[in-house]
Amino acid sequence: MTAQTRTQAQQADLDRGSSFAAEMERDAEHRAKARSAQPLKRLVPYVLSYPGLLAAFACFLVIAASLTLVLPGAFRLVVDCGFGGASDADLCQAFAIGEDLSGYFIAGMVVAFALGLASALRFYFISRLGERVVADLRRDVFDHLVGLSPAFFVTTRTGEVLSRLTTDTTLIQTVVGSSISVALRTVATTLGALILMIVVNWQLAALVLGLGPLIILPILMFGRRVQRLSRSSQDNLADASARASESLMALETVQAFTREREEKSSFAGAVESTFKVSMRRVTVRAAMTAVIFTVILTGLIAVLWFGAVQVQSGAITPGAMTQFVMYAFVAVSGVGMLTETYAEVMRAAGATERLMELLSAQSDIEAPATPSRLPDPVMGEIRFEGVDFAYPARPDTPVLRGLDLDIQHGETIALVGPSGAGKSTVFQLLLRFYDPQSGRVLVDGVDVAALDPKALRGALAVVQQNAPLFSGTVADNIRFGRPDASLEAVVEAAKAANAHEFIERLPEGYDTGLGEGAATLSGGQRQRLAIARAILRDAPVLLLDEATSALDSESEQVIQQAFERVSQDRTTLVIAHRLATVRNADRIVVMEDGQIVDIGRHEDLLARGGLYARYIELQFGESLTEA
Image (tube, rainbow, N blue to C red; front, side):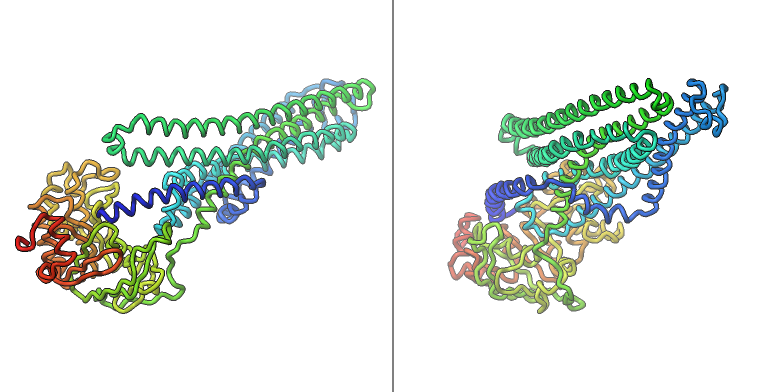
């Protein structure tokens, strides 16, 4: 990373902090207004994508609910005809039930077995559906995130995004794969039980139905509060995850500056904040459970009291009362389950809303509806025409001012200048990570804004100063920009980057796994792999951002020779502070305050004695004559 890039990154961190705080405040206000399960409608297309699983689940749901409602009727027959001494002779005669009840109990066991099997299959199909929906949702969210422009991640922390991608999708999986299944089964059995309760004894059913408003009211009152607290809990968890991610990714820096205690304290504070919000949610749910169960049990006891009086008076048979009580138990317990399910659904609604916010985020950089095409082959002629640019996070601070620059095919251009001159921004505009506020950037005469960004970037190869490597083998990392390359091509690229010898010394050579961030390699080794990756890409335009900064003098000389070979017949732009790189450039572009102040070869610029000459003397301690 150049000094300019570091300065921009530090400023971006400050801006990111204030922007993120403002965004979180707006987000909290938005989420406080979310009071329904409406966001879950966005999951319907995912669910309907698997009609077979949905149909199988519905089939076994109906079977399980029906068998659940059959059992109370069977118990009525057993009680009235077996235990009650044929209190309803016509009914017993119709079902041929006598004193020998063994067959009916055996039949009951068969029904119980069928109910268990149907319930298991219902659970299997809905769970599979839930896993598929969440897998698709995670893939879509990640695919969308990868396509967003870098500007999005200036105001959205990676830790928060990962929290949404993991924790929130897990909540959705719980609801789609479990809670909704329980809710649908409970609704089916509860409605069926209520209808059959009315059939058995409408007076007792009326008493039970009278409990409904007393149960639903606290669900509505407490449920909305649970949803808001769930969203707040998820936000705090995302904040804690983001903090942990920042600390662990920069662990060496944390330890080098002995900041362990402060980082531990900061993370502990975030975790404690999450715990407090979670406990508030748990307290509200506990209060809701206490109120609902008190109402349910008190009301049920009152119904049983009334039913017992009716049995004593002969208005209802003991078997019918038994049947009614079983249906009442199914209905009341179903309502209790729905209260639990409602809370889970509200949490999932909050999680869905957070994920849909990511999916609805728009990229600042998009391909045109009918993109233009680069010529074939790409020559690599580059032109900046009157380019003015300021980063979205700092719109009032111009980085480039009226930049005009023509680069011919096959030229090697070095960009030099003090920090903040705009050198790295030139690369970012050429890669179309951002669009200029005015002016144009052209490649082979085509405005890059008229190109598909993928097609544009396919013509470019980049070597960054702190080039990231990925988990996987050495060969996988070199192939990163050209996955179909043969092993022979990989080896040739590694040799050209002076990386082959150290790769051969690794435990498994090119098949050695690097792990996360390739932390086992030195800075120079990582840089050489990045250079090999760019060489293998074989793009017509090569961008080098301090590509040899992590190499020793001997390796730098070898790599410089490799670059000279690779740069033949292709356009090369170099951000460099090393004198060897600057000397060999066809032209040197001297930048200051976002403008070009001089252009020429090394010797010509030194002879003019301007900014470049002072820059060389300050940076390398050389006088003009020594240079």
